[in-house]
Length: 277
Ligand code: FE
Ligand code: FE
Ligand code: ZN
Image 1 (cartoon, rainbow, N blue to C red):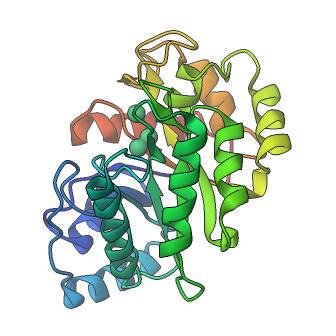
Image 2 (cartoon, rainbow, N blue to C red):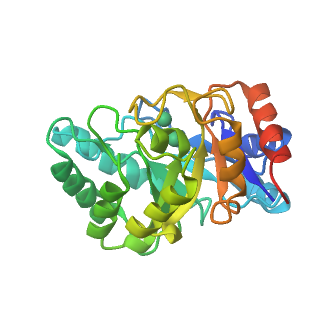
């Protein structure tokens, strides 16, 4: 079956997100661990988490996906910003252990002119400081659109990060369809070729989640503007091939399209109708 959900606001807690995911027709969701632009995290409500864990088991949620705040930049040129990234991610990973065995996605960062090589070295340094053998969470590097000085614009850059991390078995990749298309990978006309490249460079066993978004801009534009499913340059035919592809069809899919909840419910229904059981 198609495992699908969308990005949900976290303000009303885990159980509320779980119930909303099911109401929308899905069996998973993504959420921000804290305000996407700020640093404050709400205290974990252990009762809420316990109720959510029962609910998720009952409704057979595969995994849930937490997303780090956008302000987290492990490869900033400012030590203060890098320290915020280290502290925030370390705290997020502690909080993730209340819901063991799930996924935590982050944007590798922006090197702000220092160059990708220096950026990659700083990201590796943070991960080597923070990841622990005991954690049950898999940390995902998100494929980026290559906007500005973003690191992670190519599969090679993600591979270089993974190669430097000691506890690399705690790492995976989240492929964002809008971002890779924006990054120049033609998932519309050559999905097989892109997946072969991913396998050769990173290894498909690292691929743990898909952000399923259409793109407002054409192939290779490096703009990172998400569009509703079927209304952008990727298009519904390509998404039908993506969700049914043998190496992707069992992964969890997360919508980050410009929608309110009603729109997400419609997109989940649309993708489910196009999924071949
Ligand atoms: Fe993201
Ligand atoms: Fe994304
Ligand atoms: Zn994006």
